[in-house]
Amino acid sequence: MFLIKTEKDLLQAFRPRDREKVELPEGIKFPLFVRDYLTWVEPAGTRVFLVLPSPDNKRPMGIAFRRDAQGGGAVSHMCDWCHSYGSSNEIGLLTTDVNSKRRVGVNLCMDLRCKEKLEAAADLSGRNPRDFTQALMERMIHFAREALRIETVPAD
Image 1: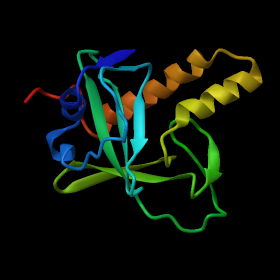
Image 2: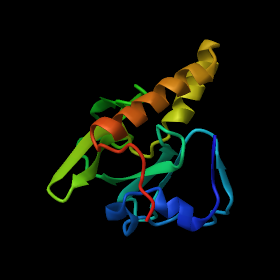
Image 3: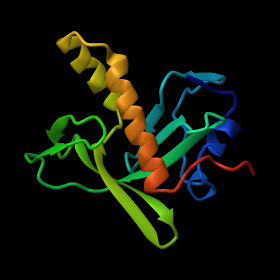
Image 4: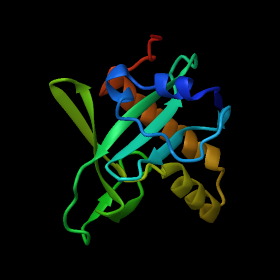
């Protein structure tokens, strides 16, 4: 669990290159207590945002993903983070800038609601959802570290 005290704190979780792209969800109220991670889709549906605890737990880190256009809604895909299956309308390529010359992408749930899917699967199987959620969080942090080289977001 982590705390986001103000809108400024939420925006500072994102890398400077991503902050101008962030469109906060309507009705968000601060302080905001986040259990595992926070995600939302901008109203236009072009971007999806993820805020999760940084590996050092000093402050949250944010990733702004672009939802790339998908074709062939009947094709089934698997989310690399929660391992759920769905059509290309549900699971597809989300991309983000590494720097001004390079982007990386990963096949994910288009709304990043992986945790809800894992909790539902845990309920059906009679297992503890925290087991699934911990693995999910590890995959998210691994992506931030390895693909984006994010350790923590520096203060401005």
